[in-house]
Length: 308
Image 1: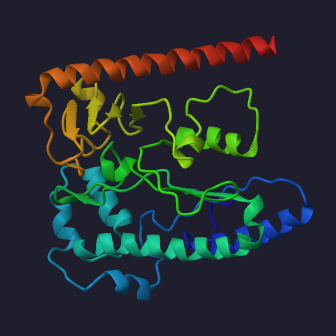
Image 2 (image 1 turned 135 degrees about the horizontal axis):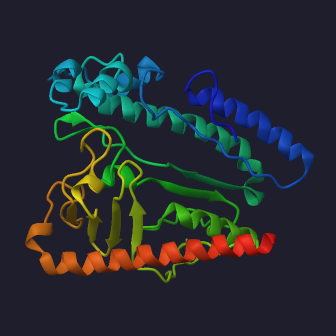
């Protein structure tokens, strides 16, 4: 795994990756290489100025220090000013710097793809992200916590061996689908029972046997969500379960329901006016959570027995 250089600059990380790829290819054996690029993580200080200018027009409608005064939690307010937005004067500059960081990372991912072009028929490259980012939401910077669409919707790009060029899949998928997809593509018969499913049928124009996606927040004690059709439902058993360590910057209510067909940015919580749908999705969510827990317990027990 390549995860960090002397800074967060992807040029350094990709330069190391290219050297490792050449070395691994010369061995003539299959290899797996995980590359973690950090450009899009705060603080956005390592992005070349010429790229920032490409996205930022110089507008300054509010200073970061002014915005920070609206952050109710003192600890988060301090982290935002002293770390996350360090060196950024204007709120208007936050999103352009984020976009510039994505562009910067993309440039060097392109260099890696160029290196792999000649071995494309025997190389599988997967590009994704562990999370998105809220950036500034509802007037304050809140970063990448919570189950907002800006956070949970991330890119998933596959390139190379057995991947049809130009194919775009619009159906929502999950990170848990990546491992079974790779196993399917390379013909690996895994003994492990995957939580996800292979995405090969979607690439081939078919469908997969799943109509819901379940996700869990890592910043609250108990915060779960489910996506089915055009609706997203988020649930916590209690208010305390929904809150995060900064007093509640990453949630709106104990229960939230959004119609993503008209509100893709989670701005209008319609839970209070759709009681029947909330009850239905709550039941579906808790049923899926129960299935996952039982499956996990079964795997743990099976693993223990295999070692006895």
